[in-house]
Image 1: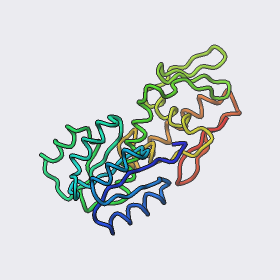
Image 2: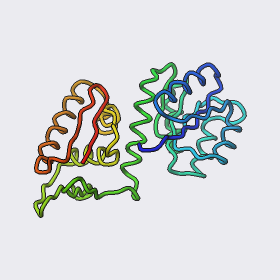
Image 3: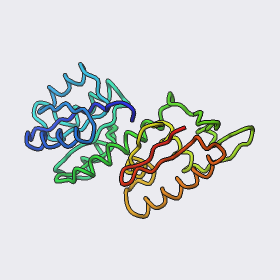
Length: 228
C-alpha cells in the first residue's frame, strides 16, 4: 500500500479503543476512534476512510445498523466486526449486509492486523481500475493474461506467480511485508506457506535473469522489494 490507510474504529470500551488505536498506528495506519454508532456515522459521512472496524454492541446505533448505512453510502468499504458474541445468526446477518469478516473478543491484535491487510490486498488486486500491465526493466508483465515478455519472447506464468508479481509491482521500490502476501494469497502466515513463497520468489528471480538491472531483494524477517 503506497499511501496511508485511514481506518474508522468504533469501540465503546475506551481502554480497548485506545489500545487498538495505538497498535494500528504502530502498524502504519491512521485511525479515528468513535465511541457510539451515531457519532461514527456522522464522522463517516464527513470524512474519508478506507476501512472500518465496528463493535457490534454500540450505544445510540448498533453495529449492524451502522454497517448497513455505511454500505449504502459506499458499497465497497471493507468492514470487520468486533464482537463478544459468536452466534451463527449474528454472523449471517453481518455477511448479508456485506461485512468482510468477524473477530470474536477476546482476540489477538496480530490476527486483526493480518485480517485487515488480507482484505485490503484482495480489494486492491480486484479493483477494475487497478493496473494490469507493468513495465519492469526490459520486461512487460501482463497480469490479466499471466505473461512476462522480453525482446519478443513470452513466458506464461502460473496464477500464483502472477499474483505475487503483481503485489511486488504495485509496491515497486518499496518493501512489501511477507505477511501481507501470505495472508492475502495463502490465507495464513505459517512456516510452510513461507517456504512456498520463497520458492516462488526464487522462480521469479530466475525469470528476470536476462535483465540484470532487475532485483527482488529479500529484507530478512520483513519482506521483499522489487527494483529495476
